[in-house]
Length: 361
Length: 278
Image (cartoon, rainbow over all chains, first blue to last red; front, side, top):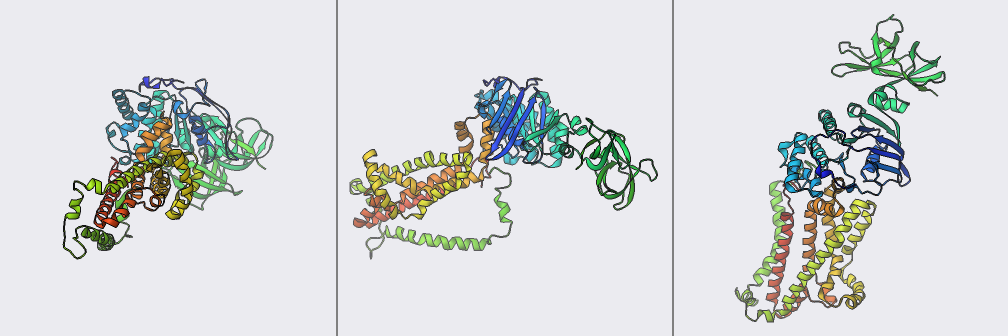
């Protein structure tokens, strides 16, 4: 638990991150249970995203890990040490906050140096390392500026450099991109991923944006009401969501009433293989992803009649929402040169990929 | 102060809701006159040779007489006492009120209303009423801490609460103290270092304002000192004015000038290097 971090340098040390284990972590706010038993094991150098709607406990879990919130049950172990009685300032973590958190009375360079200064690193050494860290986030020339002279994206980059300069064992990111505009978000999230991979640091990234989580994380933990619903690689979550909530949250999946017959899903007369474990036959909701539906021509075998509800241009593709004969909505991803007119009759074809399904009441 | 753009005064000016330049000068002129007339009258009076006489420098020159120290001994004692009281009162504000407010802001936000209520109470209680309650308390204070004049600062520490509280609170509200201290903690700083390196530099304005206003209040305090039979600047001035009204007016002017300088400094010294703090 000693603060050996200052002796490390900014150079890449793959695999130097810590193992983090959360076991049955419980947290109450008054009578409200914010965390209802979180179990999570993070491998050294792994990038984990905690994904969920607001109020699901993802930020609370992160703050518990940082020591900013005390937990009411369970254990948190970093590198084999139970950190329950270790205060935040001795946990050897780095954290980037959702709101801008640079010290307004210090220059950018002084901000980045702060953690080293608190660890009593010699002045010359900390200047070199702070400059290095700023260069790593592409702000080497902005050292003498103050926070209010930087854009939001630049401020979060500095915050990232400040969090990383001490080479902490774990990096915690609490929705660091949510205050930024779309273009900067994408740019910065890729940069965060590159830097954490280079440094080999264990990272926990909290977000409510499923696209962001799937794009950057090694594994994503989808949270709801204080517990982890499912944890897996982005591919696993996307392909095999374990329940409606995860399916809904992770993708743009349409939920279509269907029937399970002989272990296959029967959707509007089309038989599709069932994804995941076998289920008893009966009425189900089938989860169909937009890329598994294609436009068809009248008379094609298995073509389903539908009405165009809306259509949006997304650059390289177009996404159109259709209404099926039973009133359910299905979204379809297709080429941009197809122009479905709103209100027009059209025909759809379901691709033969396996679909997830859950019992329908 | 911590958010970009939030403190840009030029934005407010373009909103079109404020008076024109001329109107602003007229308001400033009228208010200035109201304040200036008595002060100028005092200044003129201090140069008068008797009520019907012409102007003279004698009263001012008298202060530098060889025996001035003896003649106005009581007044100088009063000034010394008031300065000592000002220092101790500011000490109380900095050592008791400031840490309490920061602690409540960070750890016990639910207590904020209560704290505010407690701090505002003294302004609703007239000094003369306060003394009624303080008199028996001070009979005990004298037994414990002795009858030295500085003990009056315990009472002054209470009378300055409303002013000091407002000054510090407005600064606390303008800075995201919670996030800044959390950032400090994740960067290995303990509470002492967070207070010193992170919070105080950002609360400098509020702390200075609270201190200066406290000094100004203490220098102007008469009722409590008088009724508890202590000598401070104001009680000494009253005493002198009965034998030499000119000198009393001169010292009143000087005290006023000192208070003005303090208040003007609030706006100047508090400005940080960042330049745009509102």
